[in-house]
Amino acid sequence: MKILFAEDDPVSHRLIEASLARWGHEVIATRNGKEAWEAYQSQDEPLVAILDWMMPVMDGLEVCRRIRGIEPAHPVYIIFLTGKDQTDDLVEGFDAGANDYLKKPFNEQELRARVQVGVKMVNLQSQLAERILQLEASQTENHMLKGLIPICSYCKAIRDDKDYWEQMETFISDRSPVQFSHSICPTCLDAVLKEELGDKS
Image (tube, rainbow, N blue to C red):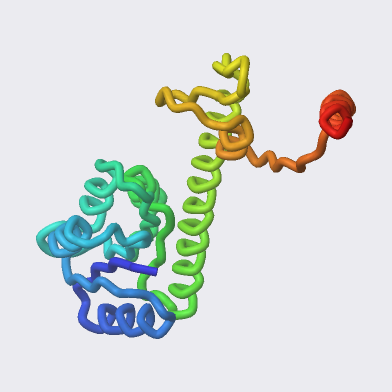
């Protein structure tokens, strides 16, 4: 998964970059809030962001607020790295839009666990959004089938919303999971048999 991180401390920077790469993620590494914000705008929407709270030029809190101030196609899971541990500070971070935080100095395994939670949440959100789109499409199709359908009284073709005429089977199959099995009803069977017998006689 594509992960953006911003950390100005050289040691922590190297550790985070190497760890994320080792865990199989695509890493966008920046060293201050301004670089992080610019990278976020220029990249294809990283889905997880790890932001140091205290950074030069622009702090992580401001980056978080700016990300939450726009409406990306996919929500970003934001993790703060911070030495702050006062309740008021943490509340401020969550109010700015953070999803989680990791207290400095952090343990590499704890970082991995927090990132895994973020990746899992992003994947669940993506699956949910896809499911919602499928349900909306299904509701639209069902609505079309429940409405008034113009049908030819002779050949039984159906006129669609683009004024094209389609065979009934095609029209229904394209708009629902219905599958057709072909048979012949007793009335038609009698008519066909009478016609064939009449032709032979």
